[in-house]
Length: 318
Image (cartoon, rainbow, N blue to C red; front, side):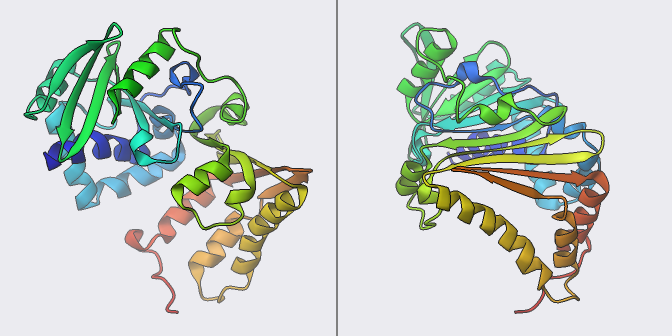
């Protein structure tokens, strides 16, 4: 059932990055100790920012977005963005099949289960005391379970569902504070909007077939995007395997700013981005690199206006 696959798994998680609702901070109690990466989007907090107020009308004016949004609202009987709270993704490897999606939203569980049950392979069973449903979606196995009244967990393996539910129930070890949670525990601003972290990055890069040599020399990294009254604040920390790698990471960030400074003076987008990057700072301490980048509400608005789809300048010919 292509529609089911497209809507249930891709649609909700994609809209979580593009829209927002009432927010929740990162709930580490649902993440197993085996997780090596995590992405959390507080879709509630995003809608409360001036940046979202600038961006939402432009997003709604896009026919493809409006069509998908309407389709999801109709199928799941929800109102977007008001019924979507937050989305968390995590996994023990870089393999897409191991990714777990945890959706926090207002949802009618009966309607959702009815939609899933339209698959001829739909099955619901009790596993280790948990109700888990599975189905075949266009040749791919999917499993899911409800957590309370407003959370849904989806992944490929029913056993992964059970393991995660046992973490929430306190039957299995959950994620401890450390590389993956450092950014979420050090929120630099009043509201955490987006949090991305990875541990054992060299191994993850190898699993994903990444060719970037720098990534293969990193131990861990996290990025947190927050918001306050003045605008957005991006904070990041990278732990390299060697001191010289950390220096190269910092140089790479500064290199982007240098490249923009040499752009064609007529390239308005490059000039706008260069101006936006002026407050960005990097600091290297041994193997650790920290990055702080405050972006004012005015700058965010200017950058949005520079997008071609918003009437900004077209890309420069090469």
